[in-house]
Image (cartoon, rainbow, N blue to C red; front, side, top):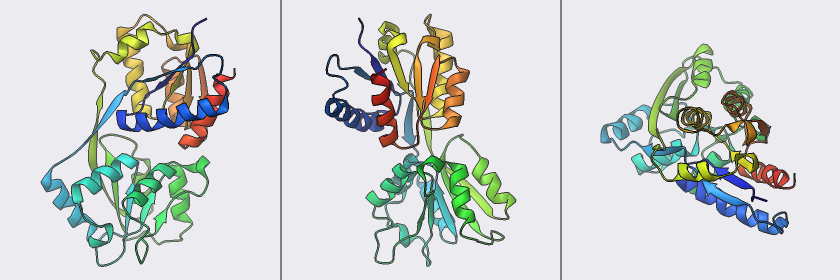
Length: 274
């Protein structure tokens, strides 16, 4: 009987962290006593921060009179902090509040000292992890009862991605500037990691999918390069948009967990007991 396989599709650095925590959780739970699952890394997208000096100057200038900054992901936070190399509160005479969509972004800010200053930077995050997305952040922002007319909001993001929050803020009257600070590069089709996919028993595989864009790329590669079908494979997604994308490319079983790595790991352990 072949071993179950868990495929982590995040960028390499983030995948290493998740695999380490997941491995410890599996060992501690005892679910893999008979046969430990194989955990593979298939980084469907690589995050490449932009390193343009003009971009750094533009960001600093834009922040000087901003009323709110929004980071769509931990990648956005890391790329901006790397570009600017200054403390967050140095960019404006007033403290600029920050909006984030989930716990990983909140932790990334804390790692850079944001929110821990003598006069802490306000960090706005949806209170319930079930709402860790653009819609959840907008709901949280509405609870502040701000008059958005004339407010300047800067959104830090990657190339492409959803524009829903920017469009919603504009409709509310805010002036919005979206700044792309990183790009996503698809995994080369000649990368040896794809060979591992060809050799695995997809019927005993669980794919941890955390990006709709990555899922769409996976679908393109499977269609063009593989004879196997994903209709025997299972997918685990922390958001309904990603789950919809997984169903669109043909996954046979698609499970949805709550957002956050803790929930993702809990759901993975549950799948291992099936």
